[in-house]
Image (cartoon, rainbow, N blue to C red):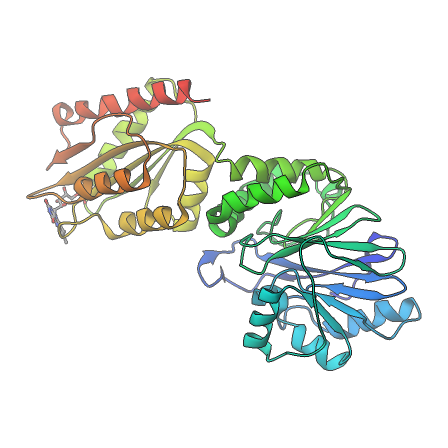
Length: 403
Ligand SMILES: Cc1cc2nc3c(=O)[nH]c(=O)nc-3n(C[C@H](O)[C@H](O)[C@H](O)COP(=O)(O)O)c2cc1C
């Protein structure tokens, strides 16, 4: 997009909207696309902060040339690499070919990946936590934030205008449809909130403890503007996105329950609906039921992050859980999701396998069970289903006590 979008007087947003890609990381659905943001500072020295995914930004290099030219400049002095993931580093090769003398600013881990991807080993300026770079009016400080979301991730803080270039942190799925800044979006809750939580839970959530460490590092630092690598630039109310990320990285969740089941022939689906109804009767006001075969894993994880209560159900499948439920539990263990209340149920015809393996999952992840798991043999008749009442009652009680 050859647009001139000022973040401040001499700082520009240079981004691209990707509405073509179906899956982020070839894994997570993108129904509303995604934006890749980079930024240009035209001071006495000029600096580009990150790039975009290769081929998504039209004449990206020409666009930078144009903005530099508007300030009577030809040279790009620095390329600051906050994150090496290819959706942000994809245009580094083109930048270096166009400006061979550009100094690439990063940390030692950045440069290892840079060489691995692009074979670039020259003109590197290594920075450490707290190092500064004077561009003239703007003085930048580098904040090392490893594992938010890769080992080399760092943030760049403009101490002059109090702007944080935050990398993947504070980002979201969803394109920027004309509006680039938070104050230009009247329907954030409708348009971005769920997508932002899905982005957080799918992409960054595994590193929640590192997100909290970043908050400690930034404690007391004034933030006028937050410039993430995906989604809106936060210039009017940066506190809002900080609060959301703080809440999610502390596993703070809504008082509700998500019920997720695997079912081939409908027995377990009927049990799921029974438990959902009993949860409503027990006073739980936020209940969401998903068939794990129908709803993508990405959205299941999003709702698990959203709600405190989780009820998982699996029919037995070759002595194990149903594969879609097994995939979910594996991913939850991999992510190390914390602080949930758990209910379990299932269905079987001979020696079981669903609930047995769900119990092992519960022990491994360490979420407390709200009631004894219920494994229904054959058809879930009213007398068999009544054992599930305790799951709903236990969940309602647990949710009401949880702080
Ligand atoms: C491919 C397949 C594998 C199964 N494996 C087991 C099993 O290992 N142990 C068991 O007790 N039942 C097993 N069953 C039976 C189902 O778990 C049982 O019929 C259950 O009630 C199905 O629940 P649903 O109606 O929700 O799909 C299997 C059924 C199928 C079709």
